Image 1 (cartoon, rainbow, N blue to C red):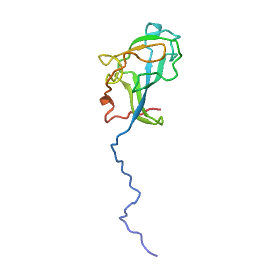
Image 2: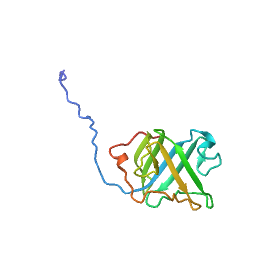
Image 3: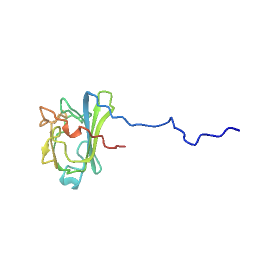
Image 4: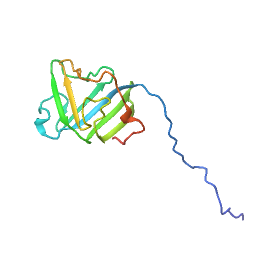
Length: 146
């Protein structure tokens, strides 16, 4: 009977490798808790679902996907560090996520990292959308999102 070696090397070692790659980002999902009931936005505002406001926005144009034509909305909400922001590529794949995070002002209009300020016209275009987008708030981050 052969004896087994006492020192064995396992070949199933796992290593996590972080690879940076350039990705074309097409949309941002914005998910905001409504903290002050209808003081933030009316209960019947487009894209409001109970105590959440959620929209998918084209990054290049500031147009909100599936906006009900003819509806306008001025939205000034205090969000502080409770918003979720999801960058997606052209196929809808998640590229980067910031959960329970301050407002990323390189892309979302507002002030002081605490407020979201959207002026949405009847076509669903955010008229105060930034002309130059800065995604630095997403560099090196990919929060867990389910």
